Length: 339
Image (cartoon, rainbow, N blue to C red; front, top):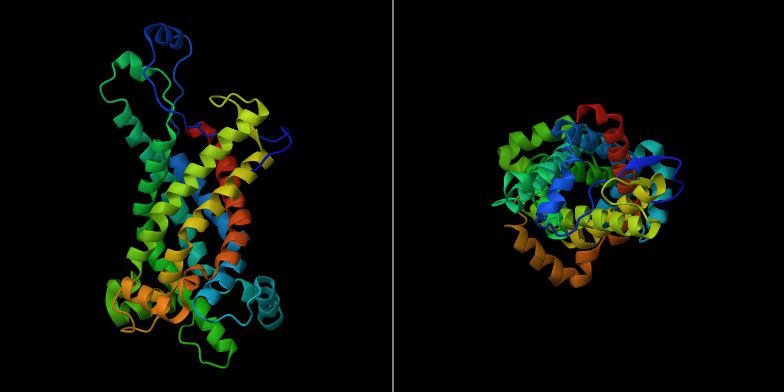
């Protein structure tokens, strides 16, 4: 997800531009160069899983800081101050407190996200080709930025089925660790114990508490995520004079595009994420719903409260998502035989 030497070349994803129906001469030229085959959906699924694991391992310590800031458990207003305090008091294990839940869920969640994005691209392509002749359909079809964003928005919906319960457990474990640090007693022994306790107390409704807030965060977030990644790649290709249809971006270019996409996603999603964290970690009955969380937050902390945790989220977003997209692109290259 960034740019540099062309020694480590990674295949680029199709760069968006408005689709047009090719003229008859163009079609005849394409008979000599057949349309590029679609990537395997299974390859997208596996590659997304690899990317998700990379994102968690790189970004979890800063995610821990973000959640503690959002839920009022911060021991310092400084991101790096909190990191050093946690490291000093809890060691490296403290920085990865609650990592089992996202690591267990994020790999399949990112697998579903990239698979859903692939499916979304296929759907908007099918819609865009509606009414075309078979000859026109056989010609290369490049998705527009609008179509890329629609595919990104679609990807958030199936992903939330895994994301919501995982984030509920993760946030509870992270907040619990902060309470234990202050002398409180641990309520959950780990991820599985937390999940079982939630199911016992309130069934699936308790486990999926905050699903609406997760969608509110992730639908616009994934539009920004995939849209920014594809747009950044297109601009980098223009700068480097690379053919967007069959050229390759360097390793550092992929890192940069992925990191920038992560920052765009969190820049848009942080207010909804604050509300989600408050709702998911609140005692049962404290809030009647998401709007109640919003009213209480604005009354107590003003609109600035909606942006709590912005610094660690953005600091985390670049390296975590650079690692994610790098993992995805490398895995796609390694699994090229599946196309």
